Image (cartoon, rainbow, N blue to C red; front, side):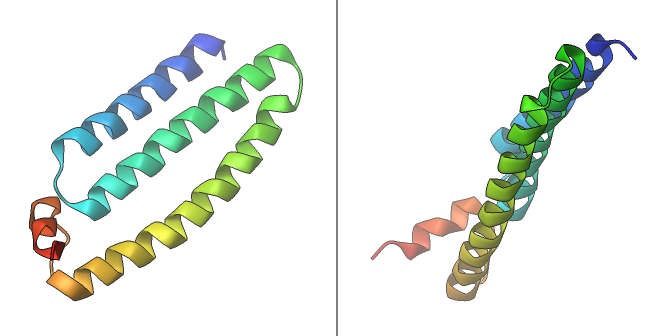
Length: 99
């Protein structure tokens, strides 16, 4: 498959994730859209790595996946603690956290 197909798919995934973060108010959906954007970047790294014939992009993807896993665990813990405090995951309801 040509490199253009991978780049177009990564662009579509990144755009969906970006619009999801901008337009949605649910923090869990926003969190999933951020993960989708990270996966789009990973796809482009792997595509360029395959195109250039080296493993540097795939090694970068490994580190991005490690950081994304850590981000997922910390982010979900924060979302759960906020949910316990205000019983909502909407971003507009986070005003109640102010003292």
